[in-house]
Amino acid sequence: MSIIRFILIFTFFGLLTPFHLRGNPTALPFLPGEKLEYDLSWGIFPIGHASLEITSKEISSNEPWEIRFFVRTNDFADAIYKVRTEITSRVDSNFTKSLRYIKSQQEGKTKKEIVVDFDYNQRKVIYSEKGREPVSISLNKKVYDPLAIAYAFRYHPVGAGGQKILPTSDGKKLIDVTVTVGKTEKVRVPFGSFQANDVVPNMKTLSGVFKKSPKGILRVWYSNDKRRIPVKISSKVVVGSFTAKLKNAKGLQRR
Image 1 (spheres, helix red, strand yellow):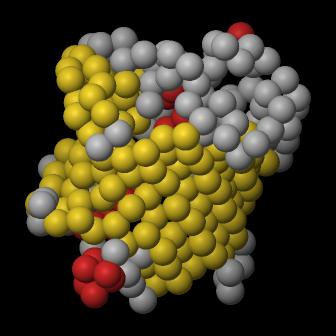
Image 2 (cartoon, rainbow, N blue to C red):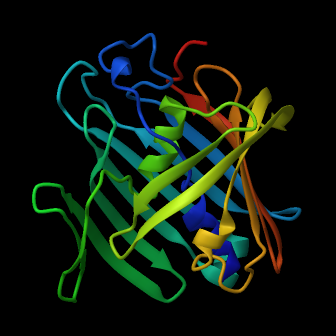
């Protein structure tokens, strides 16, 4: 179902984190307590909403970062494919690697409870799904989960025309995604107008997400300031275009 492929890839992009940001709140692009809310649409039709939130923590402590993502379809989309999915990501205090990834997935007739643990001492990723035996894959480097990567980009962006290879894992496989940063342009969303850079991944490494649309294009626009807010996400697939636009934001870092 293409709508779900778009929603699940919604937060899949980012880069690596510089250590010097730790403990310096004025240098951080985001702060604990930030919440971003989005309207989702398919063409001209509204299909639901999504939110991204950073839970409270002491920035100077060794306490992990915790990020939460929630997506919900509206009554119109529920009649076609109902979605109620929640994801939690825990990342180390330096924001260099994921520690745990939890997904409660309700999409159509599919219901899953998934936990992914990143064990760097044992060099493995352990994937656990309710009702099944855990499975693991080897891990030989620091990686981010699909949700954490969206915030890693905000820590250490690449300038216009630049590229970066992003290591990530969903618990079943390791993926290196090449991301290209495009030009700066004006983007209008319900929350306001922004100068933003669009970020485009190499879709070859994401063919499993766009199985029915191998030529699908995903673009994420990040505000061109130190906060690097993801203000718009657009995906073109065989059945049309899906878009997420920022409609509200709370707890933003100062410009």
